[in-house]
Length: 225
Image 1 (cartoon, one colour):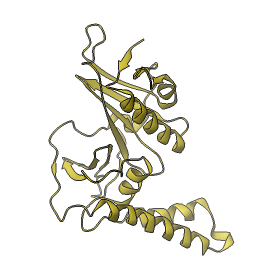
Image 2 (cartoon, rainbow, N blue to C red):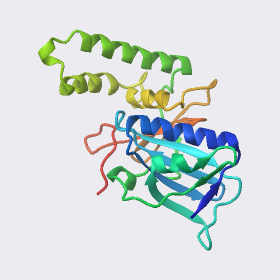
Image 3 (cartoon, one colour):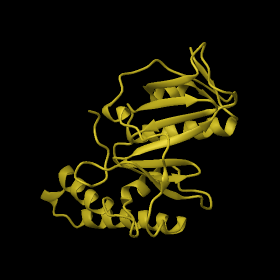
Image 4 (tube, rainbow, N blue to C red):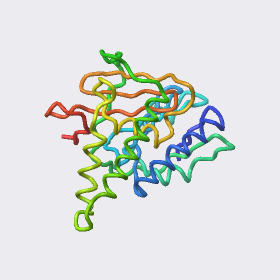
C-alpha cells in the first residue's frame, strides 16, 4: 500500500478537515489525488455548489512508489479520511475507485494569470456577501406558499442567488459560498482571482475553488467527454 508522508501534523489535520467537509455534503464523495515532487493536490466536488475544490498538501519528501514518481488516482474520500494519521503525518492511499465524470475534467496545472477587471473585494466583504445570500435564501423560502415548498423551487431560488457574480468579476457567488463552507476563507488575505483557458479560479492560502466556462458562456463544471 502506498503511504504518503505529509510535511507535518498541521498538513495532516488540514487534509482531514477538508475531507470531512466534502463528506458533509456527499457521504459517498470521491477525490482525485495527484502527487509530484513534494506537492499533493486533492480535488473534490461538493455537489451543493457545482464547483471544483482543490486542496494543496505539502509532502515531507518527494513522492515515489517504486519507479513511479507521479501519483494520479481517484479514491473514496471516506476511506482516505480513515487512513489519515494526524500524529504520524501520514495517509495511506486507498484502492482506486471508478471516478465520477468531473474527475476527468480538471483545471490545467499551469498558465494561470490574474483575471482582468476590478479584482476581488476584501475577505470581510466576501464573507458578508455569502451571509447576505444565505439570509436572502431563508427569507425567500419562508415566503413560499405551502404548495410551492418543493425541492425544485428551492433549487430555483438557490440558482438565482448563487449564480450572481461578484463585484464586477465573472466569479459566481456560489464559488465564494463553497470557499467559505470548505474553510478556505480564513486568515487575513492572500486572495487571488486567476484564469487559465476555460477555467476561473478563486485561490486562497488554504485551498482553491475552480469553475469552468460551459459552451453557453456561463461558468460551470462541464462533464467529461
